[in-house]
Amino acid sequence: MAGPWKDARGIPVTTTPTIEGHPVQEYLGIVTGEVIVGANIFRDMFASIRDVVGGRSGSYERILADARKQAIEEIQAECGALGGNAVVGIDLDYEVIGKTGSMLMVSATGTAVKI
Image (tube, rainbow, N blue to C red; front, side, top):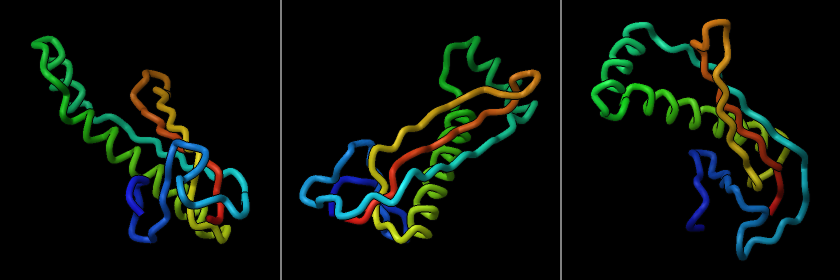
């Protein structure tokens, strides 16, 4: 199946409510995955310098990509545990948390289904 992103378990995830050509046979419930990561002080310092100079912050981009991947893998695992074989309607949210805003939370939510 082309299109939706899959992991090694082969569970596709998509932001759309359906997967074209694969009708939903059963809705199994909402699945969620949350990942909280801390920002390293040295990475913060170098990112600030780079922001002043106007470049992209590759270190933060990598952190975001890794956290997003982990959150998606969590919803895929939860889907598999429910007996599902796809997650539709996923939503990704990003939130800065912590007293000093030094933590980043990435959450993924979707609906586990059987297609």
